[in-house]
Amino acid sequence: MKNIMKWYFTLVILSIVCVHCTEYDDYKKYLEGGEIIYPQKADSVKTYPGKSRILLEWVIVDPKVTSCKILYSQSGEKDSLIVQVDSRGGAEDDTIRLFINNLEEATYAFRIISYDNYGHPSITVETEESAYGDMYEDALVNRVLKSKLMDKEGLKLEWYSGDDSELSVELNYTSQSGSPKVLYMPDSVTTTLIPDFNVAYPFTYRTLYLPTETAIDTFYSSTLEDEIEFQTELLNTVAPFAITGRGWWVQGRFGTPTNWIINSAAAQNGNVDNAYGNALSMWAWSGYSPVGSFTNGKIYQTILLEAGTYSFQATVEDISDGVSKSYLVTAVNYELPDINDVETDALSFLAIPKAAKNTILETSFTLDHSAVVSLGYVANIDHAKQLMFNKFELVEN
Image 1 (tube, rainbow, N blue to C red):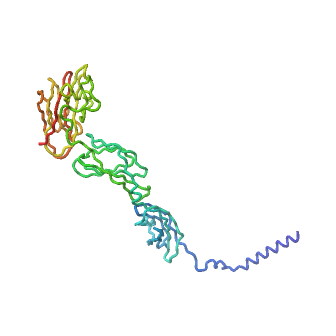
Image 2 (cartoon, helix red, strand yellow; image 1 turned 60 degrees about the horizontal axis):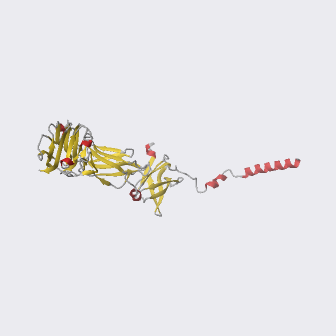
Image 3 (cartoon, helix red, strand yellow; image 1 turned 90 degrees about the vertical axis):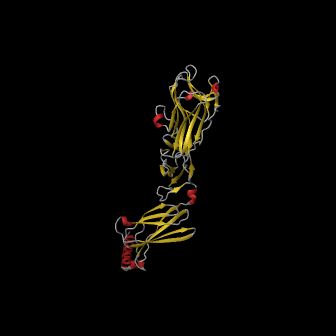
């Protein structure tokens, strides 16, 4: 035991002697070449992708920092930029923003180094970001147009849902006054109504994208052109009027006319009658026709006309005595006005009189500009009454 204690005290004494043998300024050997100074490194670094460019953003609050160097590589070649840092003057001034332009479409690694006025470098801060370009943009697709319909309310467009990175759809069209207009539809919109759309002109659209939520540039799909197609002349206008593929019905006598629009009121009572040379008819007969009588029946076509003066003519096949109310009508619209509105809303009209077979009835109108015009006849048909024509013609005067 005595030997162990002797050895312990000897060890303690030697340790004390060694400590006192170290010079007080021995640490200076670690500072040979001068004291190491580190300026503030780039803080709160953010990146924003763009088209052939990238925006870098970081914060410097150290007043000793006078410049920053940004290092990156492109096509194997190293490149660098120097940003001079003004004296810090407040929170807003603490943020440095730098656009790096003319970049190839690729992902870049950036190294940011701060320097003071003596050239002391900070610790390097690294970050990555991508630049987008033609390859990305060429791969973009347009939002798909599901359907289009032109009626009295305007142009109605139905769209399929957009891509997650889609921003909106840009649609260019011409208004009814002839002025070009632009409409932007967010990606959440799937139905578009354009009340002042002019069908005489096509419309174009393209889809806008952001590759990421933080992107600084918008990218565009290719532009598509579309139009609302209307016939430019009346079709199936002379007896024997052609019928649709559904064929003859009701004791083999009647058929549905091709190219003519029949409203729900006239439904099965507006048709082609082979007992009258396949004339175009409205009629009613209790116990024989689908309905015994009806009001506000319409048969018409809708066409696109250029500016000019026109005469719409209908040649009589048969008009029953006592047809209560009927009109030959033209209207700047996608359908004929209701029978009680004809005299106020029609472009032109003629109250149909009792007339002999082959009498030509006529109503004239003038258009100052191209327009969609509906032409036909509207009537109230009582029991055992009929209104038939064997020819229609639109004459430009």
